[in-house]
Length: 258
Image 1: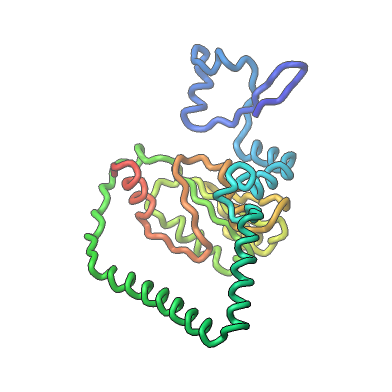
Image 2: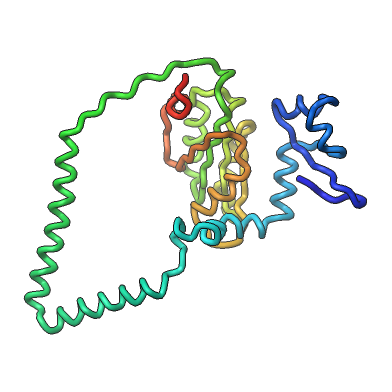
């Protein structure tokens, strides 16, 4: 994170793994590009950002998709043309029902039956396709596995968080390669107390979603995504019980290796 100090740019860096080794090399490219920096921990840096940039983080998490790519957002405003078309269709349907009720009911019944039969045909046709069981992944070496981020958006889940934590701890994946983030709402004190009683420690981290914007799961996930340390991310619900080798299978499926 760059800050200005006495008229110059100072970088606040929270290094991890190989980044720490690169910073200690005086002949490395990082030393030539960054003349002045301060070291801190990831936890302190994230707490500082969460404390001083809550409104900005909340707005980005809640509204950035609608602003940047409205075609992918459910919150996109309804276009005038679409509104007129929907209103016109509604008027035609109501007019038809009022003038020709028997004929309109018959037409609608045929349309609904056609939709139902098409859905049934699609399900029946699925039995014609056979897919072989997936090949068991090669185990590989833990050293080659990437960091895997797991994000869990929780709200009033104090009754099941112990099972979720136990399932994550049981995963067949190196603990030093896991980055688990529980996203809580600011007023969800019961879930926070339940997590505190579990004495989490690494690799678990609690992220508090800013109150800015709607209180939804997509917003909570957007809050945690910029903090993800791994190149791969999984999203678990509070009731999920993942298979022990789920993450290894996912890595192999993406990268083609064990």
